[in-house]
Amino acid sequence: MRLKVIIASAILALISLLCAAADSTRNNGPTTLVAQSGEQAAAMRLEGEKRFRENCGRCHAPPHKFPPRMMATIVRHMRVRATITDEDMRLVLFYMTQ
Image 1 (cartoon, rainbow, N blue to C red):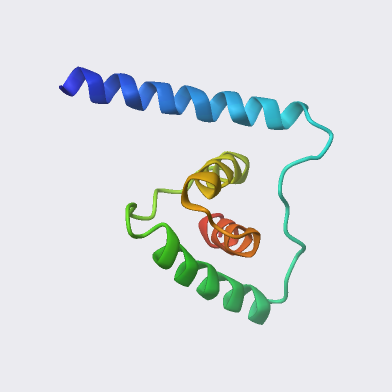
Image 2: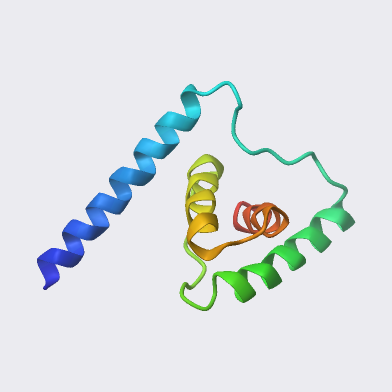
C-alpha cells in the first residue's frame, strides 16, 4: 500500500514537471499578475484565501510555497478537476504565490 502511494506521488510530481516544461516552451508565457498597490494586493490575497478555502480547502491544506510557475501549473490542473472559474483561479494563484 505504501509503495502505491509513493509511486502515485512520483507520477504526479513528474506530470507537474512535464506540464511546467511544456508551459515554458509556449509563447503564451506564464500566468502573470500586474503589480498592485499594497492595499489592492492585500484585498486580492484575502479574497484568494477565501476562494482557496471554498474551492480547494475541502480536500487540501494550503501547500508549502512553490515557485509561481509550478503553482500556476498545479492550479490550472486542479481548475479542470474542480471546475473553478477563471477569476477564482487567478485569485487563488495570487494567494498561493504571495
